Length: 266
Image 1: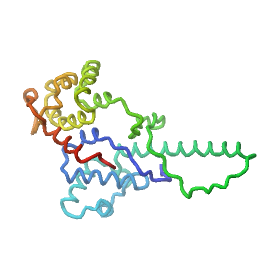
Image 2: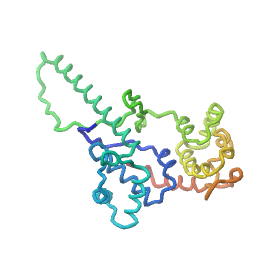
Image 3: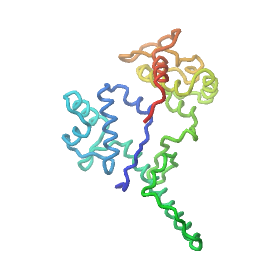
Image 4: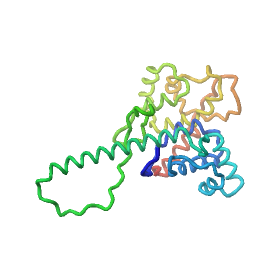
């Protein structure tokens, strides 16, 4: 599917991204983000299997930067018909273009109907704009063709169920009802974004444990485990989680620093 228009935005899911890329170095993380942007802006949301072409557009000049690009290509991209593609990005690209086409077609039909109803009215002296702006991103519904959930970043006026976001991100999904009640209590003490940031920092440590030593979501919330220190794990843990300590932890120090810097702008 070739898009007639390169949309100026694409969805980004920080929690999903962090969960699958926490093992990357800073250089590899940067290479991955840059390759995703290059892919999105390239027709078909794919890149040619041409190392010189990719390195030039990724602006990878040093040996370290080029090694990072090769690592990311090998782990997160697949090759088909001489083109690199990323499965998740490809689905989102198809969804975004499908939604754009549907909005455009609906607008064209509405315009024709309105023009027909105004045939008998005097014309206006207004001058048409040379180019209409692209609509703001909006939540998508289920795509019947690709069967992919297409919830892009929604405007602030339409907030998603925040507990569902927490529940989907938590690695041990036992006792959802209890977790929901615990989440409501936790929201009186901590902001949702801060809670999710702290959880994202602890996910690598949880992943390194045996499943039986990962707390239930309700336990994690009731015990205010978002205040736990971030575990520096180098392998599977033979026992339960490390104990909590008083004071603000590294994750919340990062949150405070992030807030003092002001809102993040894309």
